[in-house]
Image 1 (cartoon, rainbow, N blue to C red):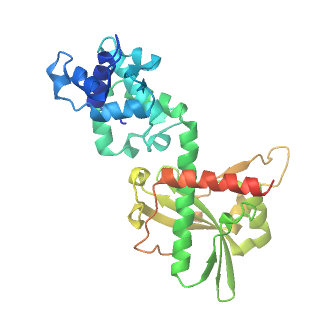
Image 2: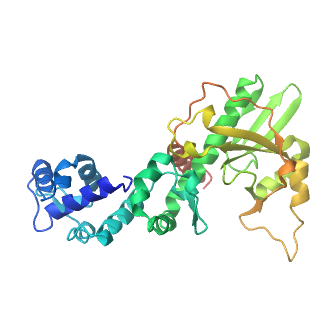
Image 3: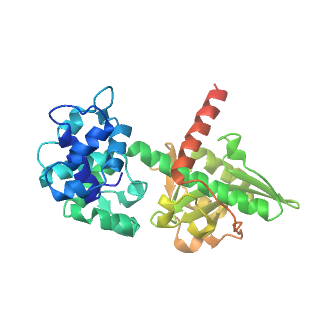
Length: 318
């Protein structure tokens, strides 16, 4: 639930309605919240906020509706400090899908926040930036899921494009993550091995490369290519993700990567991966076209799917 002013105010009145004792049921609880003195409280539809509090286990519904300690702590006075605390709680429990992309490295990229959401959050200024940065720090698990979802969406998009072109394509990363590339395609006698990278407008042009991927780049040389799918900012909340959410698809030949990664030395060594940032002119437009009817689930759904696949692969290799 986005911490719009109405949502935060509704949560306060719902919390205040059960501060000094539980309500016997949801209907009674909603009625008590509507009767909390002010005209605003009576005008708000409290059902969405009540559903959120139940879903987030901030209230218990065993017999009476009763507040959790966290909710009770923000139920006394509807001052700004209390409303900001509720907003922070909402961002922590249900962070918006754009948060990991918009709030990074100690800075909020407001241009990546959907206009409607930014308008709803405007009442939080001048505290908005710090609230979003704090929520982003606490949201590392969601960040991983979103990044995995963007990567999987990129793979599925490229695979669909290669399949549509009439060649033979195999999505090898769904078999194992040890190939050192994601998709293998054959068109006549030509073999291509595609390492697919997904990104957004802010992260475009750079990517992480694992040691295994680099080794396969050296072995297969011109057969091996990085292909990067760049998604627009509004794709972060899209469901489904369509070709309209793809800004561009570009390639980086293996020869460019081999010039960028130095040999192992005291000054350079591999950990889990290396961050590669080629010169902009090193990229070339990819010769693939997405099927116009392509429809992919949201990045969050694809990220969870990727986590499940990763778990299954680890189980089968034990």
